[in-house]
Amino acid sequence: MKPITPDLSETESGQQPDVPAKQRHNPLHGITLETIVTELVAHYGWTELAEHIPVRCFSHDPSITSSLKFLRRTPWARDKVEGLYGFMKREIKRSGSGG
Image 1 (spheres, rainbow, N blue to C red):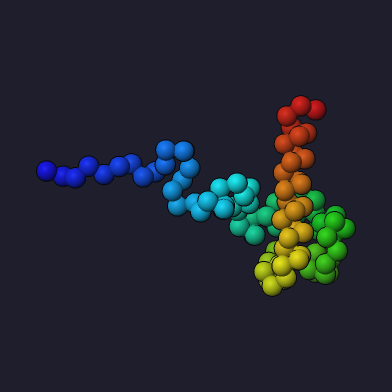
Image 2: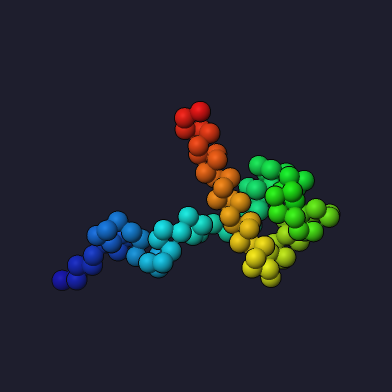
């Protein structure tokens, strides 16, 4: 007789079992830095992005690759980029849901 194995796709609370407790409420969990930078560039463009976050990788010969290298080595800049991404997502949600 085969043992009965429980369905581990979700816990009783509806949370995925492999997501650490501290990440369950993190809106950036599972979103790569490359995705964040790509979406910011698509939304703002390099010029406006450099105005929001004045770093050389956004203003002088900008590219996704150079920006990722810089942001991975510079925690304060990455924090600003993640903050702007959250702001952008909230603004998009607000403007699309009731304007």
